[in-house]
Length: 159
Image 1 (cartoon, rainbow, N blue to C red):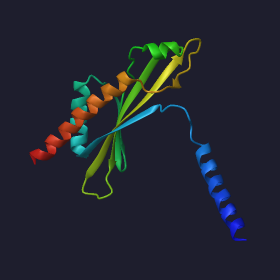
Image 2 (image 1 turned 90 degrees about the vertical axis):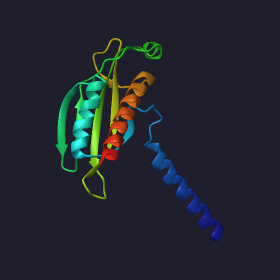
Image 3 (image 1 turned 180 degrees about the vertical axis):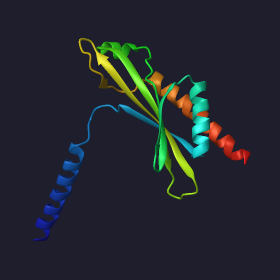
């Protein structure tokens, strides 16, 4: 009787794991997120726009969202890597979004992160599809994020 309960419990746990993992894609990640730091809303707007300009990102849209805000940039069209060309991709683009979300502690501070989504066009198709973020794009976003983080930290120290 006890052995049957152990086997049933083991089978149930296995079933939960199997069902839980079945929804996970084995494909590559098409969204890259980089945590920048913490800032007030005024610093978020001022410093983010300053660093976006420095890195030559063009702002497409700015939205206030109840407990935060986002700044969306226009699409960037980087060159295609050899690996992407071998996969049949003939054109790629990505979009950078800088998001500020209110921290749970209140106090007017916001958690800021950079989010990048990459899209590609394959030969013979006019549709844009999600593709993995290439290393060149990741390094460019890391540089942007690190510069923005430094600006946030310098602003905090200035108080």
